[in-house]
Image 1 (cartoon, rainbow, N blue to C red):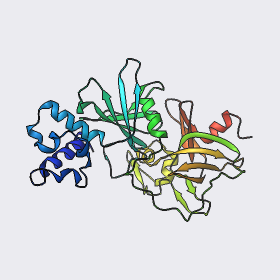
Image 2: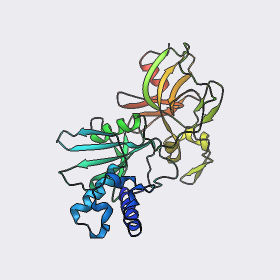
Image 3: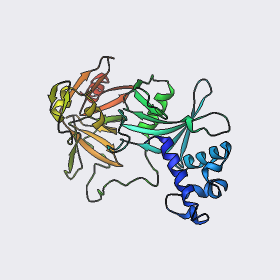
Image 4: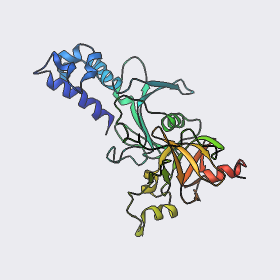
Length: 312
């Protein structure tokens, strides 16, 4: 959803309720942000506020979205404030349907002067493979993020960050599932890199409970050619449904026989699946079942192991 709509809905809903509940407003569910907002945000209809007052109410609604922030500065001195609690990995299927990059997303405020400007709030979307797009009053095209660019730095934070926001929906319970934590001795090739699980990867708990990436892809078409779900993604991994299905993980370790341990949802999983890769036009590689991001470049895990002579 457009961030302007999100903030506006917070403010307008609050102001409408002021007609009947002007004092108890801040205690109502969904309007906690008013407690820290200036008094006029609670006592005056939004349409009666001055532009400066509107800006302060907008900022209070926006700041409420995150308790944790990280600031980075561009080489020209421009400051970017990253709302860490808004990081989502990956973007749910029912959220922001126009976003073509869904591996990670985050809200960022471009700070300019003392007055909060809603137009400076950007929603960043990443594939965690050097591509990004933004949304504010309009959607940007999908763009390559050079390694030292601001977009690349924000991507690195969003794709690696452990989400700790208090209002996060908890993943389904796995308390009865054994995990590979601590990592058994057989996985003695230490990786410790961010990466992704591609379509076709099967990730399992130690007790044998497994899920497959992309098992909800029933099939799609490329041009006029019908392509099967998981099988189709192995031959056309850069097709949009295949890119959207990938899951960001932390690749922890590998064994000599090719099995892998990854960290996902605060839990360790063993990963298996077919080994394959494809070279993209820019010379980079994508593949499965596990890819890693090494020195800013995404590559299949087996290629990383070979290049670093870790597979022997």
